[in-house]
Amino acid sequence: MSAVVEIDKQYREGAARLWPLIARARRIISPFHINSDPDAVGSALGMCHLLTALGKEIAVYASDGDFPRITAFLPGAERIVRYGEGALPEADLILALDSSDTGRLGKLYTANAERFAVGPTVMIDHHVTNSRFGVAPDGRDANFIDSGAAATAEMAYLLARAWGLPITPEAATCLLAGIYGDTLGLQTTSTSPRVVRVVADLLAAGANLADIVNNFYRSRPFPTVKVWGATLDRAEWCGGVVWSQITPEMLAEAGAGEGESGGVINFLTGTKDARATVLLHRGEGEWRAGLRTLVEAVDVAAIAARFGGGGHRKAAGCRIVGDEAERDSFLREVDRLSAEQVAVAGG
Image 1 (cartoon, rainbow, N blue to C red):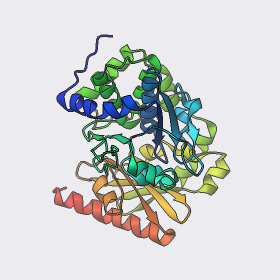
Image 2: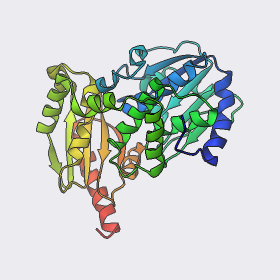
Image 3: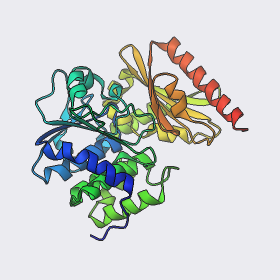
């Protein structure tokens, strides 16, 4: 394959720094974050295919025991381990992709915090708010962060090229799925000339674009349709913020899992005149909040950071401890902060 995209100095140096840790490892555990999305799943599975071809044993873990049904078609998805509780099995390396901080790994991290802290733990991510929890056994930095990347899957491809790894059709499909998921099919403002060139390379390597488009945008399981309908039916305004929520009762009524709600927040984000969009997932004593915006002046990562979360300017998340009163207070604060950002920008 004749590649379109060039590997720059940042990636050559990052690849050289991380590769000794990966090369020495025979058994690797690669967890992806809770409430996962196509980039989390696709980047982990893509890297799994790339490293398995070298004879390494890779176990990909869903940190909350679930992943979006729309990603179940991806090559290798049937081997994803649904984490429940307790210690992880022995391994030579933890390879975490697309997780901005340890909180995003939920109970999997909590039950294995010492393993992560001792290392080797390699972190590859594109979130500007990444907490850099990767560490080598000697304490050296084992993080590679590129907040300019449209998706962690884009980073995984560029690193693989820097490492000289062959890109199989299976790996290419998983990585392209990650890019398409985070850019909504190359529609977001993060869609750069570089990521378009990466997409061209992945298609040339045999990525199955038809399967990705059909599963992401043209075909949805009936439980997903029911969850979307219930979520949209509950949509409300809080000032300039449009919001809705998903509860365990809604999922049970639809016969759906947590991963069935993926994508509905992007639909809500298109609501005319909304400064920001919030989708709240009800958990045990808390709310997991996803924040989105299409307004140039609004930075939802900065808003999420006020509540201990993070992400990107246009897509972020955080957790709110409490019940309906705390939920409503949070929504009012998102409305206030987003209005302030627009005012400061002169909008």
